[in-house]
Image (cartoon, one colour):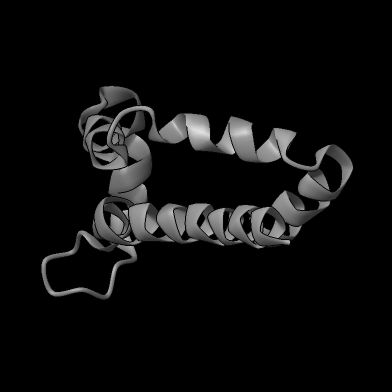
Length: 89
């Protein structure tokens, strides 16, 4: 995701930042919980969790619930750092 996002950002400058930040209009945790409850994706999660190495067997679900939101927030913080760096200059 990072490489593709950086290439996209090079071409569109901060337009990509604005589009990316739209996912944070509502709390990302709510979106992840809705995704995990959505029946359309339950087969995907069930298949991925079959190869899970966690004791409770829900490794993919836990990654979507806990890791992905943190990752998305870190990308947003990275963009925010660019914005503040440019604003100071």
